[in-house]
Length: 295
Image 1 (cartoon, rainbow, N blue to C red):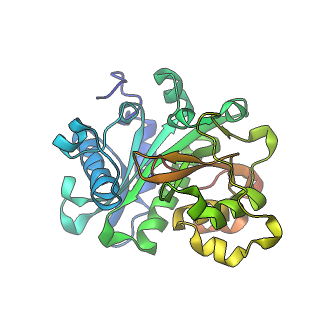
Image 2 (cartoon, rainbow, N blue to C red):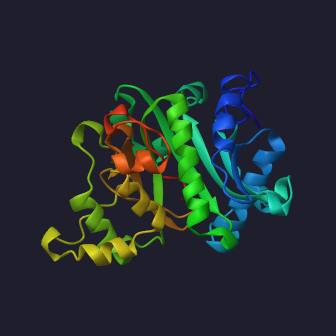
């Protein structure tokens, strides 16, 4: 499964990874700890959690092999680093993993030959952006742990990952539940009118998949109601100064309507730097975040 036998990608390498591991371990709160997947067993456990959330709970459509092994699997898993949140009260093995995020750095995407988001969006503007890119995806949390402590730990861990790898821009496909965009007219129109990415870094949905998001004129949008209709993860990206690309994409496999989220790390406000425990000015360039293949 791991496409990088030299250690890059899914399972972290020694040295720098050890320093990052120490930084992640320091974020723990109570019985919850954050770390990167260490081996294939960790990745398999993350895939099993994704299957329970995406396929059992959210009614995504697995292929025959995924249904047989009850794991959410695709070719990107071997190229990614897998961020885990574990509850040590549940044990130390697979049973302890209660949240996960899939992280694909630009250097690993180049080895694989593509980013996941490129299957839905033209991400050329992001590839031309100076600095290293990070794609976020496959974010999910066990049903019993969907509260503030878990999400804060996930986002703080991503912030540390971004600091460590000097990431300039984060992006990924974030999802709204359902495959009828018209029923999502309010949140999609709100994102289109008030959070569109600058043209020079704006992903655009591929022509054959593009669904226009401007169902409603800007002056008819109740912003408070629109925000209430957005998934918590998407709202979190907006709080970080995130943007969306041009057009939504219906993902029938995952029973979602996707938007492409973009976060410039140098736009993250000072309060988030303080929140994530780093004494850096807002211009220093680093945040935390989720956009996922099925976030």
